[in-house]
Image (tube, rainbow, N blue to C red; front, side):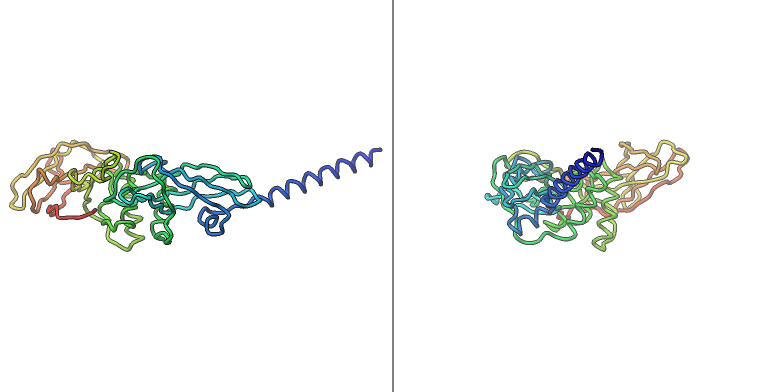
Length: 301
């Protein structure tokens, strides 16, 4: 009786193992690109409104008799039926399991692919771009995801690849550390010099309007110094002839690595010319000095 009981338990365990193995064998993992190319997955895409965030709904239909685990590739580009609106670039990494014959919606994170395009309204139909994505853009999106960079900073990096923006357009004033991390990565990837100043534009989130507000363009010069013997700093901008142009008492970001203050030049306020920026303490010790040329003739967009 004991042997018979053990035999039944053993057989039951074997059956369960076989069933589990069979179920595992029926689950296929693939990327969204591979799924579409192999016709194992059919998609329909529609905008949810906006361009930075979860702004695209992709309906995935599994055409196979297996359950599919589908991972979204970074850098896929979707084009709107109405070309006045934005192309949408996927950040990637979302994953979803779709049963055989089932359709399932997934909301994916996107970036604007045309800095000159308009903010998409909801319910605009989108189709996948046929040409391959830029390899360096794909690498950059993966780097940004793994380092948890803020999307509005990553947006400016995307325009390097989709609209040929300059490297010094990748900067977010309130995220200097993240900006520095991304800039250093991009400079190495693209074999370019790290910029010494940045051209910053404001992003527009008004439906049907262009996503860049060109009237709010600024030139940013990050001033950085150590904080070992931190004292209040007096930051002054001098003209080329040595006269004082402007004194600054702005916000300073202080952390374990030192102090950062962003010096701003605006086209509607500041004159073109060569300026020297200095940061001095109470004893007139110079902690930071940089000479910059301000001309506002850049075209980052």
